[in-house]
Picture (cartoon, rainbow, N blue to C red):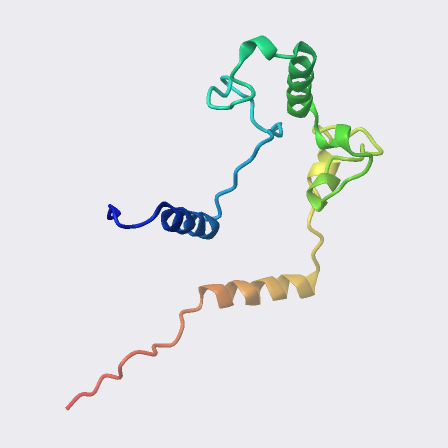
Length: 140
């Protein structure tokens, strides 16, 4: 790929320049991703691949954080709704709602003479065919 004439310093500088442009990030520490449950140990890590230096307290703390994040809901985490979607269901209703209560479910439509005429006009407009706006026919 590279010719033998190029010096090591030149190649090293070229590789470092490419790495700067490619946005590769090299991390020395590991921060737990609580949203994902780990399946296996990280065998490629130079710190966590050795089983004999496993700290049992840190391991149990990590497992506890994962279990807590899975079971917690926004109501458990925050004292009040953070986003608009949290508002629904956050506060308990003032009355106990019974689905069998027919008066709450079925609101009869109150209509008078004026509303009936307006409904007829709206129905006629919705069924009315639009005027033909295509190419005109010419009989010769």
